[in-house]
Length: 163
Image (cartoon, rainbow, N blue to C red; front, top):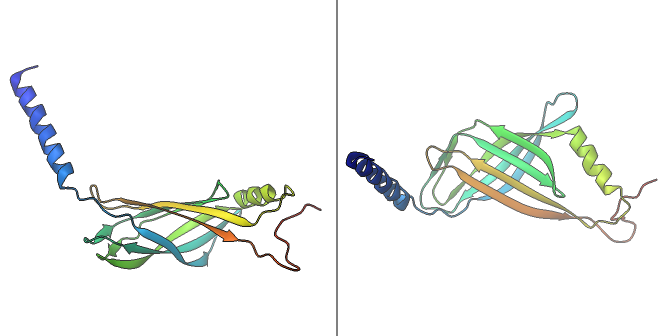
């Protein structure tokens, strides 16, 4: 390897390290479901417009030009969607981002059949993973987990039983 090649290699590594050092650590976004609207679907699918409330706890605005989301219910893939929507989430601010998602009727059936095992269940666990795409290194990934408690009490059954 020639001296010039070594010099260029070291120069490149130096620029790379300087670029990484100037990239500020960002706090994770806070994302929650703000609303759901029905959309027109095709045959064996259900389409929904998932409205996400995105809170930016950082000192810099987040410019985004696309979004992607995956919903996992009871540990199984349930719905996914993408959007080419673009916008800005202000510093220490929030915005509502719409992402159309598709739920396959087959996936819904699989989830329902999984509940028919006769075992009682008291909650439905979900996870939402996604990202807001920005330019360069500004893509922000997010993840949110939660659970829905099933109602219980007199006259309310918290399990699905097979007939």
